[in-house]
Length: 259
Ligand code: ADP
Image 1: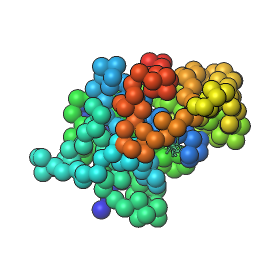
Image 2: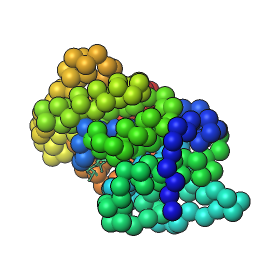
Image 3: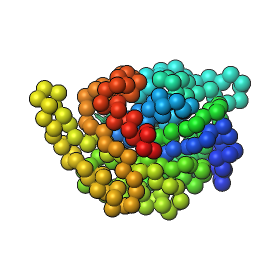
Image 4: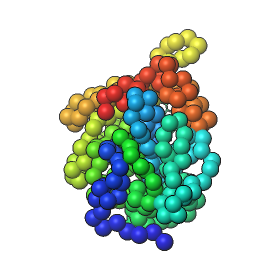
């Protein structure tokens, strides 16, 4: 049984959390979860206390991206303890429900579940809670936006025109609900062939920077399409944790510094 969330404020939901940073995208598959987890690990490496909440109710990927297979338990019998990985406190809707079930949930059930993940989890004291949103401009990010006081949202897009058109719509939605847009990340920016070092702009390049300028928001950095980034994600060891000194990891650290 999930409860709905009329007008709850961040103070009530997550009293020990200083900043909630949303990570959103106009559409799925652009690397929103990959950016979320690597941003979280980067902030932790920069010395902050960080948690990540996988709110992508229709496609929770944080369990795989962190390599966590355990189920959360409760030490006080009231609230769930987050799991931990790579220096982060981690909670995902994917730990608790079968994603196939969530696919048929209506908006209020989804919002209720998200509020529970904020309120009924022992987040403790955190400098940042990174919230990996479901993609798009639908009901879910909108309702969530209205129910928590977020520090802002980081938008993720590929450089491709279709993805950028969607991210512009997402930006307008966050404007409408007065959530500050912290900036735009260009993911899958270009590909450097590991054999010949030639750079290929698979989804184009630089489009997000131009779009950010047009929208009057900050450009936070670009992350290449890269085999090690994909493999790290699939192994549950984000590149910033597994190869922190690599240029690929540094691309995420740059984004974290710019946020
Ligand atoms: P979203 O959360 O936007 O749906 P994901 O983060 O799940 O996207 O990424 C979609 C797929 O693309 C995953 O298989 C992921 O490993 C891969 N991916 C994301 N970013 C990169 C990147 N920079 N380089 C290579 N693969 C990437």
